[in-house]
View 1 (cartoon, helix red, strand yellow):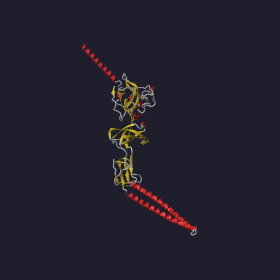
View 2 (spheres, rainbow, N blue to C red):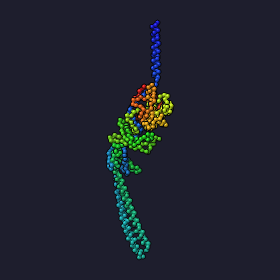
View 3 (cartoon, rainbow, N blue to C red):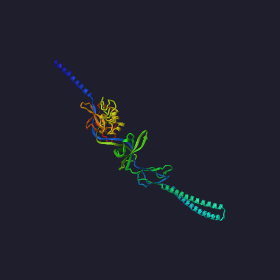
View 4 (cartoon, rainbow, N blue to C red):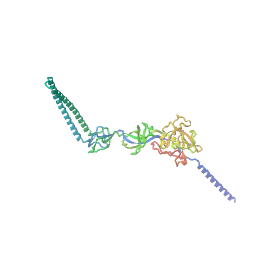
Length: 458
């Protein structure tokens, strides 16, 4: 009996022990768990993205000023030409005939001048004779007036003949110019991009000059005509470095710099953009006119900067109240960042908010109206921000930081945290659903941005 009693007591004690351990384990498992990431170092670039087309710096359309039939072609696609080099010739037969006719008309006009000069001499003699006879009252006054009129008419005819000579000379000059236009010469040094005619083809220049060739000046120096959105154009300045890629060389990255921001807006379906010219070196001639370029204008760049993941600035523990900024839970965020969209603005959110990050690394916070919350010194570098780190008791502890530029995935830490310090990016049970304050940041296409941060559960 005693043995059975002892066995029963031990069994009850074992069940109680197991139940206690299970309850303790369950209580521990129900405690808050968070996903953290370490503050590390890496490159961050605040960039503006756009697309554009590669084009030659100078492109000339070569046309014909006269109509005719193409007789000879001396240049083809990709031909290198020099300024003044003959690249095509029209059939000159008709124009040569016009020149010959104009020369004949000029000779006839000059003969008319000689004839008119002879008429002047004859009329002058008759007029002088009539004056002598009239002075002796040997002829009536009407004969004198008739002789005067004949002389004046001869002088006028001579003047008209001289004007006809000038007209004939002008017609001859025009015919000779038209004949010269049958020879098409290259206006610049360059390479032929396009040839739009063939031998035997008729070109008509009645209203507009037909384009026979398109010649690019120098393909070793090219430019990208990029369309920058009006929301970003205020940050783009001449001289800023640019990186871009083309589909023809997916593994290659080309470089250039902003040469000009044109003031004329371009409106397409209510979207306003501004053409930005980017100069590009093309010594190896890999780039070709018309290629589509995916452009990244580097506004600011930090190499080996201390940084933290952008989601850390959006995380707020349940029931948190930012007393320094005077904001309660669920209310608008101050400069340090509160829950919801305000924290996203302060911490470099995705999409449209990402453009605001890093614009004013030494100015106000992303959320308007916060100022320097809590008496922050306005002459300190960066803008204020708030993150949470694991506290000694395992609970989130707020940490004030100063922030610099952002690329949408990482934010520069100017002061407040050291390298390797853990920051909370989300509650462990929030990793599978969108976090408060917005969706996870979109993957960056920034050439300076490394891979995603490695999160670990704590």
